Length: 215
Image 1 (cartoon, one colour):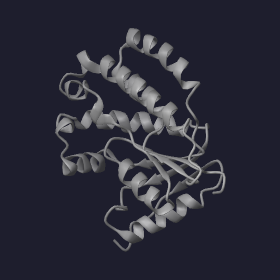
Image 2 (cartoon, one colour; image 1 turned 90 degrees about the horizontal axis):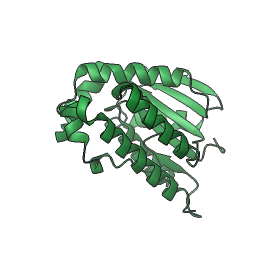
Image 3 (tube, one colour; image 1 turned 180 degrees about the vertical axis):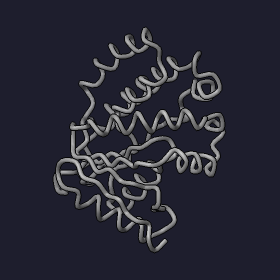
């Protein structure tokens, strides 16, 4: 774990990325980098009418995440060993490939390719893998206004895209966590088990499939 100083928590909308990143940062006294999705002025319109607002939404996210990533990692913190983020910069491409048409995607790809060269690659990615049903339930429970228009079909398409992306992921060490029977927010033992698994993740790709017993 000594080489895994920059940890990214990833997963589809509703997987618990921000919750786990925040809890892990508290435990490790880490620098916390959170995605500012509420700042996107096109997001509400996108969920209501994705065909007309997809390009604006994805381009805003791309540029916003680029600015945040480059600013955060030019500021050296001598007092914190770890940095934990609740998103991977590569998620831009996952979403763009789903939401954009061919012409939009071609333009988007040119811009993304230029920006990606300046973004730091994480040492470890923790992919919170969940079923569409579990994700939709989590989304409904947290009841964010701008997420009320999200459809089950959209979440299903994201699950398929995320699984495909991480099945082929080789840019850093990867821990795939099956979260369908885990509640690391409300169950301290689940959090402790996951925390220890993350701390002891070996290099390469590995899988963690907790049973959820003891909940």
